[in-house]
Structure formats: C-alpha cells, structure tokens
Length: 324
Image (cartoon, rainbow, N blue to C red):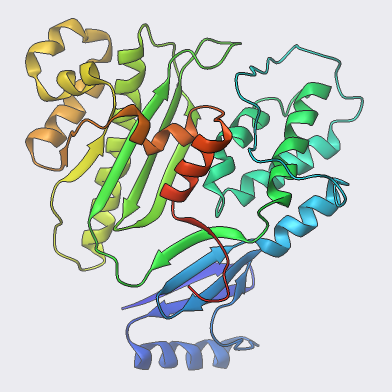
C-alpha cells in the first residue's frame, strides 16, 4: 500500500511497500523534473522528528517567524493562551484602524493549530472577529503568541507502539458565545494514545439547555468517529471494538442510551436517532467521565494555569526533547 500527498510542487510518498514506492519514484522522475529530499523532515511549515519510539510533529520555525511578525521577540511569556473568565464581544472597545496585521496573525495561528491543539479555543475566539477586530481582540491575539514564546518546540507525539482503537471525548460550553448565546461544541479523538482529531466550533443554533448543547456536541463527535472507523477499515485493518465516547453530562448520555427520552427531545430528534443507532450497532459506547477528567474541556473555555497544563499533557503535547 502506497500513499501520495501532493501540495502544489511538494510531494510526500509513504507506504509499506518499498518496491512500489521505488517504482512510483522512477515514474515521477521520468515525467517531471524532481529532487528526492530523502526522509521527511519538513513539509509546509511542519517539522517531522523521527525517533525510535515514535514520530514528533511541531512547527518551531513557524512559531519563531510568527513571533517576529507580531513584534514580540522580546516579550515576556505567559502560562496560558487566554485569560480566565474574560468574554470577548464583537462591539467592545475601539476598532483597529488597520485590521491587516490582525487577520494575518489569526490566519497564521489557525494553521498552527495543526500541531498545537492547546491554542484551539483561544484561536477560535480570535477568529470570530476577523471582519471588524477591536483593540481588545488584538490584545487577546498577542497573548496567544506570548504563550507560544514559552513553548516554541511543543508539538504532538505519535508513539510507535500504539493500538488502533479509537477513544473520544465530547463537551460543550452552554451559551458560550456572548454575542449570539450559541454554545461551543468540542471533541477530541485518540488513536491509541495519539491525538488525531479535535474540534472547537460554535453550534449552528441556540441550545435551550446544557443537556441539549452537550448532546449536539456528542452528535458531532459521533459523526467523526463513524468517519474515522470507516477510514481505518479502508486502510485494511479489521473492525475495532466499539469506540468509547466519554461525556460528563449524565442527562445527555441517558438520552442517547434510552429511547424513552426521545419523546422529550423532538427538537433534536435527528441527532437522537443518529447517536442511538450508533450506540445500538455497537459503534460507540457512552461511558460517563468525571468533569475533572474531561479532556475535551480544553476546547470549550479558557482555563487556569494548572488545569491548562494538566489537559495539555493529556493531549500528548510535549516539548521536543533530545530523545523521546
């Protein structure tokens, strides 16, 4: 099996058949003028560090360039990407006279979340104000970058000895957007011990209760689980055990597991049937997790220093050491 990833004139070839990879390389060389750069170490701003125990991805140089662009080379680092209990509104404060730098920095930060899920929530908040950013929003963006100053080599680690079982967590911040009162959906999914998928997104409609908000988050996570399980199957691996979808809202779990509750939730009926079907078919299980251990909480709100550090470690985020 061989996979080919092409972006403009950059190509990654990977797979488990060396002979087929070599044949593909010869075919490409005969058609295009190409240069083989050997084992993958850098691709579109992503730095790849191969170790005996796994693969480490970070964007160290990209972060350094971003710090330089923001004019924060000599700034002091902070422990968290966003202040706790601060709500940013679209019309609060003076407008920026020129939003170009704001948009440039936020766009760069969005790309950085590829290897830095720990800034996902803060970047999600900053990206809401791209159209008409204010000075307070720009201060928030500068704080994210000051946080990166203290952890420029941090990235995701993918252990070699990892199972192909999926584990997931979903959470929601009810009415988390002060401008629209819409809730924030968050989820994260692990393949073995490695974080492979996560989301922080404002829900499309207003939820009438925290249970409804949590249930919509579970629905979004369930959809991703179904897609990932299908992808793993297409790669030639046998079906895995049911994927645990951890939630900390007991009512939302009961709605999914007990069809009697459906009569009370007709306004989210499609979500109910989808998750219920996945639960019945053994695609997912719905274990309850204590709120203190809810990893998806990292994507729903600004956290204290201790809480942020704890959840970041659960996301398999590490600072690049000399050896892993």
